[in-house]
Length: 105
Image (tube, rainbow, N blue to C red):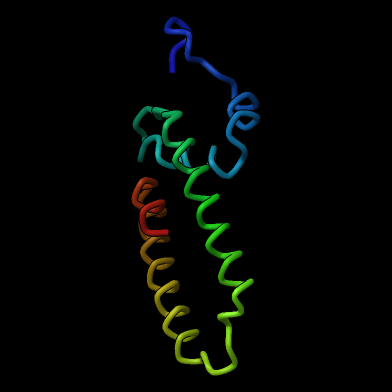
């Protein structure tokens, strides 16, 4: 973003345009380590679409009553998979590789 190019926005303006969650995702994707951040509006737009798609999918799962009593093994598999991804995400986060954090999560 650059004031001279006319594409400068304040943080408040960006949050009002895209919402807090999409803004966080775009900022996390905007640069790693100590490099200059490059906020890309397209990333925020894609984040909104992905978040909405995930919410719709989750609502469908809940409404279809696919959660059954005998899903213990699936719960364990899901939990283990989430734990693996979170562990990797924490490692990337500690290394300030925020783009990889997003991809891992």
